[in-house]
Image 1 (cartoon, rainbow, N blue to C red):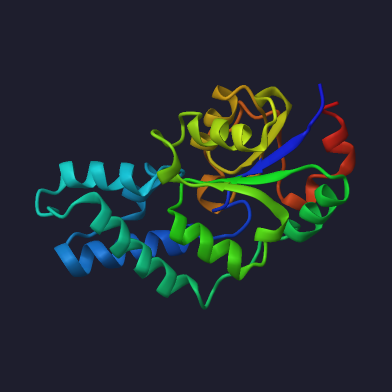
Image 2 (image 1 turned 60 degrees about the vertical axis):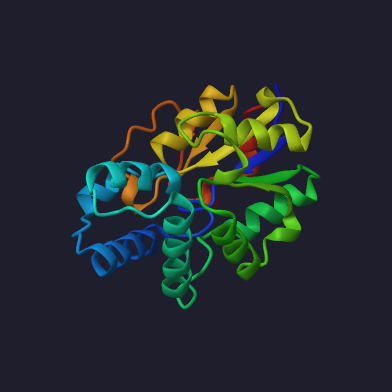
Length: 219
């Protein structure tokens, strides 16, 4: 068994953006609908798609009447506005990506984020040259914890699922990776530290802990 490709989640793995995602939802719901969106409510949505979040919120709050596409666009614009002055990579991103590139291991990002958020984040951090493909929420029928995002990434990379390694921070992401038949390293971030990540093959504190020795242990 060998690792022939790496598929990384984005939010919470490459970049610490969970706080800004929360703030953008909170600001939108408060300004547009007078809804007090709390951290407790936000926790149930960690790792899921905007479409999933707004589907639930529309059921919960009848005053939200706009179509999903319009809601997602509004939320995305607020997120970019908040995040653009704060964005920075998490420790170890460039070192790990450089190592994988030197070993000619193809990389992809598989994220629950919208294409606009993914493009903004990966372009700003200058990570697109490392990546063979980026799979976003809108590219598949179902978001995490279903395996669709990771299976689509493996398909685009032309690598069998069992030869892919996923880097994830959330329980939904780990579940999606295992459902896809892939190995998984979990790197919990602040909001996901207390989630059950026990399905992952390894749990580490930071991308800096993903050493060549750890990667070779999958061979």
